[in-house]
Amino acid sequence: MKPDPPVTNTRSPATGGRLPPAPVTGSPAKVLESSASGVRDSGRHLSHERLRKLLKAARLIRVRRYRRAARRGVAAAIEHQIVPLPTEIRTVIDVGSHRGQFAVLALERFPYARILCFEPLPGPRKTLLSVLENDRDRVKVLPYAAGVEGRSEMMHVSRADDSSSLLPIGHRYVTAFPGTEAKDMAPIEAVRLDEVVESVEQPCLMKVDVQGYELEVLQGAEGLLPKVGYLLIECSFTELYVGQALAAQVVAHLDQCNYQLSGVYGLKRDRAGRCLHADFLFERG
Image (cartoon, rainbow, N blue to C red; front, side):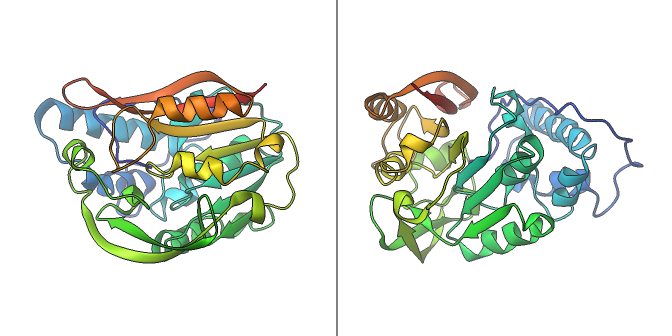
């Protein structure tokens, strides 16, 4: 999960509800505004960002589950509402859950689904557990990163911890998203997904947001992928993390695994207009 770029498209879920009074301290809108420290811009871009966040807040407060998460500082990833996925999804494997932004969306959008969350960092995982406490019957949180093999690893922890990665954070990433440089290293445990995910009810969606480590996650899920009908993967067009596989490599790998690229969403660019990354949707052939 990367900090918000200059241009982002969002669409609200089709749910009703009354808007609460003007935002005050502790309200979802105030929480969203105060959590925007990862973006340091000025002038037109700053005005655009403020407006975008306020519009997102207005959408979030209309849904009880989103509103509850926002009070804990977590904004549901409603920008993913534009991705065409069936509501009949029965299993969601959320790799790189962070504080639960996608998991909260998945609980609302896929009412029949069981959610498996993978988050190795203790701080975000603590918030994740808190945000999902009312849905414990549908959610399981696993304290692992995903990779090619099960072993101990060191994670590069970013000042904006949603930018942390098992790969070194690249200069271009920090330039595009100021305030995301590494501040620490943290020991974590990595696992192969096909060794720890025992049962999958279909249809199954796997979302992968792991800051440059996407190909390694997929390589460690070879035995699981035949059960996964949909993959939603954040892929990069340029090297943002040192040594990462780029979008073309991920697409080529999944082509060999019998997946077809069916859509690209949420394209992010830098200030010069160069493409940085986007969410790729794959469907199993």
